[in-house]
Length: 282
Ligand code: MN
Image (cartoon, rainbow, N blue to C red; front, side, top):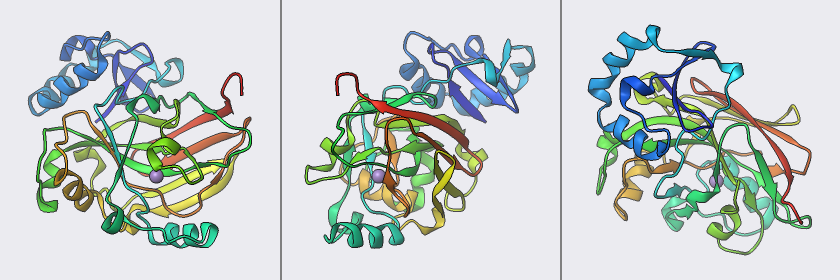
């Protein structure tokens, strides 16, 4: 099932090219979409069949007629993997002549939840004279409170998957500073539930800037896969329902400029495209 959050906070189930408003069926409160999502996830095993049964009778609109918001509007945290694809490690070593460490050495970092924006928004560059890069990533939303979860059981705690752009200013500052500017975490276009996603480690992931393919890889090349990364994170901190975990970018990262359009695609999830501009006043 594909679960979208609309720009006005309502929930929608995406079927082919239509969005069905199932808010009345699942008791969704558009004033607090994050709490509504957490509630939906906790009752999903039962709600799933109810949604399927009642979907045809729900009001619907063409996908092209709605504005989508971020499918996880305001998590308590965004946990992110540093270098997590071998070829990206190589390119970071070449470009910056510093050892690009992985989860093994570096652990992980947090991005500010307030950096999240929806799948048709604009990334605002805070500097004209600093290199700012795109990073295409597979991310997931935590469905159940999790602590000390071994990799073999991590799948039970992952509710669904989506695409994420980890926008990053290059430079010497710590990662949370370089990656937490407002608008630096576009996510979308919707959550694909884990059952529909199937194997998250067999999905092509691609990113284009102005139509030019910049990143093209497959999630099978992750160094710490979703489940191993989940174990590493949950050993340190309690993951709460609605938290976002993002799994690192493959090779091909490069800079973005004002005026660019950046498109991401992940198999079985879908695509979205954002614009790039300068932050007002910069
Ligand atoms: Mn990243």
